[in-house]
Structures are given as structure tokens and as C-alpha cells.
Image (cartoon, rainbow, N blue to C red; front, top):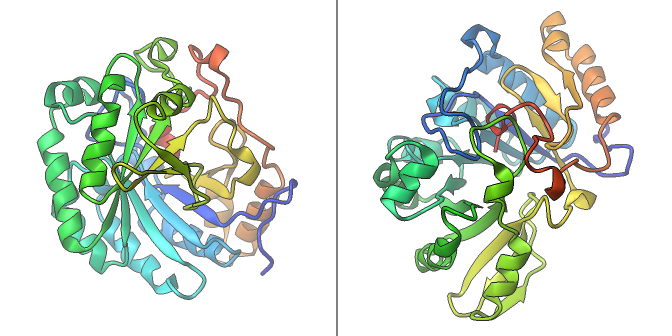
Length: 330
């Protein structure tokens, strides 16, 4: 079958799959303290998720990332990973995972054996009190233990840190040094206007352009051409020897080279993280065991893909979309 190419000539080669909207943390930039999650009977079965992923691999998707919510809270999740392992080397280059790390110690070895080689772990602070305030849960020791277990299992770990002006801005250099000292890449992420939360994002917004500029006053940063399939732009920090990424949806639009689409646990395909435009793939999936209707729906969806997201600093206090990040995957 022919590859998926959007109206702007961008090939879709990267699928991010949210296997659940549930999470065992309640990070202040992601969701409300009292979240109402989807009824379990609205979620696709693991077999349906596998069929959808396989359909995309058949159309040229080479990178598959499982996300949530927190994917490790989805019962049977490992079976989904194992079922997709057969595509590695046969169209699919890699299967990766984004996790908050809370349960990673229990799953790390099984994830490696299932074919995963890279995981992204969210760490927004190394201070236990600050971590608990951001995550609304005191789970830093479990996260750090999960990272150690992942390394022991042979997984490559990348750290993700959401930059928050009033919570961790002062800690960012220490987070970078900590990650690099352990051989981990680290990526800093600007807060994104997704879903109604209990905080004022405008108050917490920290420009990574300013962070980058400040870092150049005390570190030597070398721009890198590296791309890992995501939107991060990378530098090498000479003093630490490590790689540092910046994801800047507000201070730098990264849409021109976007190769990603996002599939939710209910079967909705979102064509852009910053737009509400989506297509229901659950109906054609369940209409027939033959994939013809499903493939037609996927192709029609890609034709609707917008040129870029709708994130703007001046509108940060109001979400660009009503859905939370946990619905479409981090």
C-alpha cells in the first residue's frame, strides 16, 4: 500500500498511541486533581489497538510509541507490546515507551524482552517535596528506582522535564547535570495549553528560548542536527558531554517537519496535538474484519491534517484544545 502523505507533502511515519487516559500521578500541568477518566467500556481492546497499529505499519509508519496517561497502568499492556514485536525489522524500526516511571521497576525487564529498547521517563524535579507538589503524589523514590531498573535491563533512558517558572526553573541546570552524569539524554519541554487544569499556565510558562540563552552564559552548547522522530532540537553540552533537547511549541513552531499522528485509547486519530481535528477509526475498525474500510478512513483522515498547531503564548491561559494531554498521549 502507498505511504501516508498529508496535503503539505509530509510523510506520516510516526504513530503515538495512548493506551489509556488513566494515570497514577496528577501532574499540575497535565490534569486536574479530581479527574474524571473515561469509562473502561469506551476503550478499545488490546486486540483492536494491535490491529490499528498494524494497519499503520502497513502504510509506512516506522516508529511506534506507546503513551498514556500512564501506559503501565493498562492491564495486559505488555501483551500489546509483544504482539507488535513481530513487525520489528519488517517495516517497523522501533517500539518505544513514554512513562512516568512509577511502575517501571516492575516492568523494565519484561519491556526489554518484548522488544522495547528506549524509554522516556518524566522527571520534573529531584527534590522530593517539589516533585510531590508538581505530581500531587510523593513518588520520586519509585521513579528513580524505575530508572535504575530500566538501565539494568538494557533500556536506553531519556529524561523529559516540563519547565515550570515557579516550581523547577532554578533546578534545571542540576537536572541536566544529573541526567548527563548517568548517561541519559534530557529534553526540556514548554508547558502546552491542553485541557482545563487547576493552575494558570500563563503564570507558570517558562520560555525555553530564554533558558537556552541563559545556559550559554555558563555552558558551551553545540547545535546538533540530530532528530529522533520527535519535535526536539538538540545541543551538546560540552561541560557535561551529554545531549540536551528543547521542545518549544510556543516559542518555536516545529510543525514544518512533523511526521506524527496520535491515536487515542478510544480509537480517535488526532492529526495534530494542537488541533481538535480528529477522525473516528473505531467505527470502521469494528464494521468489518476486512481492513479496506479502515484503510480508507485512515487515508481520508490524513487528508485533513492541518499545516500547524494553534499554540500561542498570549492565549496560554485558555487551552488550545479541550482535551487533556492524558487523552492524546504525552
